[in-house]
Image (tube, rainbow, N blue to C red; front, side, top):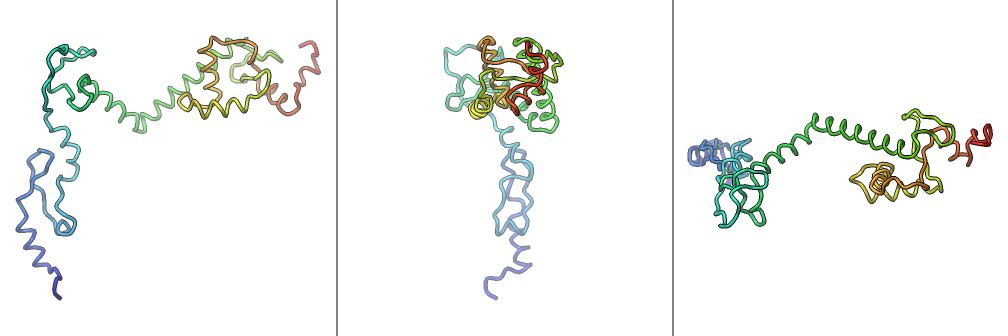
Length: 219
């Protein structure tokens, strides 16, 4: 049929193109031409060499006169160690690459585990600071075990405040942690919050009062 490509036609096309195309990353290797390149087009890079193009590309530019010889990080301000894009004259290439590697590390499984572990330790330390600032024990029954204690809003409205801070302060984590962060910034103000154990807190939430008040009316 007219227009139909035969095996011999494909082999002739491959033979005519083989040895004429090089990888654009700068490695100097020849591209291996295959039959599907006739329809899809000849690629510019060898598989896996696309990222090497940015690494092999030599920086070009002129450092303006009057700039310091060193960056604030104390690395020399040379053509090889500088960016010349818009607004990037004061960026150190060495430090930028280091930050990029750290960012890539955070994406790995080990990086996520380390980040989660540090976040857990920070959250525990923040909660402990809050509990110590507001008495260090349950204001109802006197429980002092750290794992049993939690935050209590004296005048109510805790759920609404947690939801509001969860939406406004996504970078600080859940609503309770965002509230504690704000309290630490304000110097732990008194009169609005207190510390209760989970038993007393849940009892007040379900029945409006804690059974400890009935057993010990003076407390």
